[in-house]
Image (cartoon, rainbow, N blue to C red):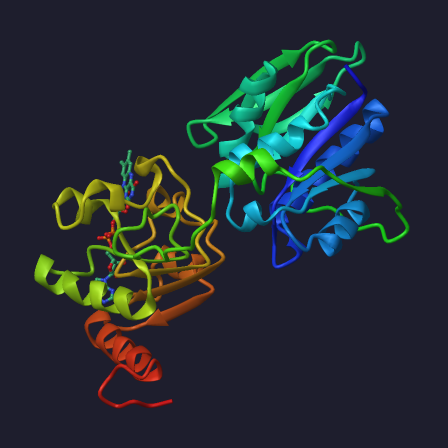
Length: 335
Ligand SMILES: Cc1cc2nc3c(=O)[nH]c(=O)nc-3n(C[C@H](O)[C@H](O)[C@H](O)COP(=O)(O)OP(=O)(O)OC[C@H]3O[C@@H](n4cnc5c(N)ncnc54)[C@H](O)[C@@H]3O)c2cc1C
């Protein structure tokens, strides 16, 4: 085993994703503590800027796999890229627990027969060289501690957002190396195109926009205006628990702690929802939160970046009409 830390970094439009910057910060910290080299893998075309960014955020060596196969996320191809460097067994593999990262990490552990831990929130090297690792489960209600010996390679999936992004160091230098073309993968996999997900059927976890309705709606028929609003916005519909309990939406549309998931869409709009902690737990990581409630003192209004006080029956149809008009699909065709 070599004194090396591997990371696998996601990027978009040539820039590293926030999850990648975060993982690099942690890798650098561990690298300094263990005197280990941080090696980062970036799969995709046009990754020069992402590679330079990775160096500024803590990587010593970047391996880029610039294959057209990476137009889409392809875990098998990423694994094949990593395998090119596997003659030097790393000590630790750090992967961010994004949807893609969480898919790749167990594949790495299985392929190379390395240890594996998910939901990691803290990694602390010990004096004897072992690693003390903390994970969280049951929505952070249970904290577990594991010790991995210094002799064992371990793949660690860090919870995105658990550490935060560190600072870039413009003076850092590093090496960038291009990996071999993945011909074998190209023979097996061809990206033929992309199909945009339908917000009506996409899982709430994957939706970029979510609008959720609560007890402010008086009956199921009325709840239909929320769907119209969601359609106009290109958003998925969710609900608070009373609505799911009444059967107006299936339970896979439930938002909150009972759903067992934390949503983090770009936009979350709550309509007629009071904002009980049970509900807020499931959506507070959303990037932008908007709340519509007739009670300005409702807890949800304090959670919101934009709080609109008023009757949802007046506000929703009007906002829907305006969005449709802006999109050129409504009667008004306003711009
Ligand atoms: C163990 C446990 C687990 C739970 N898990 C969950 C969970 O996962 N998810 C969840 O949602 N709940 C959960 N709950 C229930 C939770 O505590 C709340 O009771 C629930 O979230 C309330 O739903 P609500 O906000 O839709 O309803 P309410 O609390 O009744 O709020 C309705 C809101 O609508 C507003 N309103 C009313 N009329 C209008 C109108 N015309 N225009 C605008 N606003 C209006 C009101 O001002 C009010 O703020 C759980 C409870 C327990 C005990």
